[in-house]
Image (tube, rainbow, N blue to C red; front, side, top):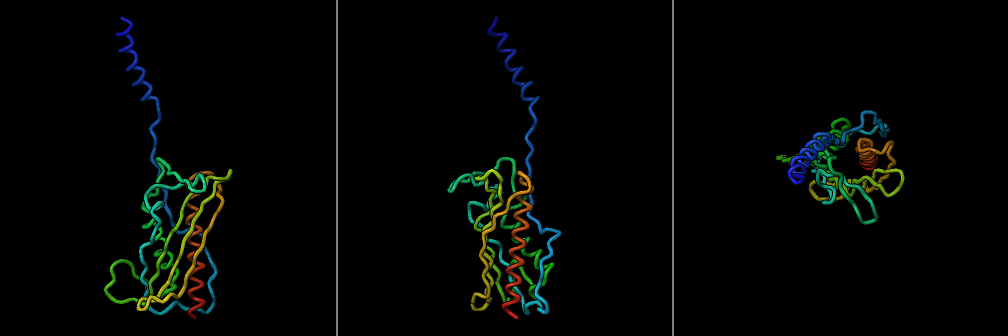
Length: 201
C-alpha cells in the first residue's frame, strides 16, 4: 500500500515542482555603433580617392560562434549558457566597419562582397580576442584586434593598427559588456582611420 501511495505522490510532486520553476529566457546581445561617438578628424583632409573593399572580419575560432566567452584563468575560458550574440561576431564586426565608413567617408567609395570592378584598397579586420574578463573582482571587457589597409594591386601595406583594449564594466551584466566592446571597437576604428588620412595626405 505504501509503495502504491509513493508511486502516486512522487510523480505529482515532481509535476508541481516543474510547474513552479520559472522558465529560463534566452538573452541576445548586439554590437552596434555608439550613437554618441564623436571623434576628432584632421582638418583639411579629404577622403582618399578610389574604392576600398571591406573584407569580412576574421575572428579567432574560440570567439567565432554565437557564444560569449568568459576568461576565468590565464588559459581558461568558458561560454555563457542562455546568453549569446544576436548574430555571429564576424558579421557583427563587419557591419560595424561598414556602418562606420558609411557615416564617415574616409574613402570615396566602399565595397563589400563580390566585386566585379577592381578596387584601389583592401581593408582587413582581425579580432583576436573578444571576451568578458572575470579574473578580477570588477569585470572587464577585453578586445584585441588588428586593422590592415593594403593596396589592392600590389598588396603593399599602407596602414596597420594593432591594439589590445581592456575596459571596466559599468555594471556586471552582458549589456554593459556589449556596449563596452562596441565603444572600444569604434574608437580604434576611428584612430586607424585618422592614421590613414594623415599618412596619405
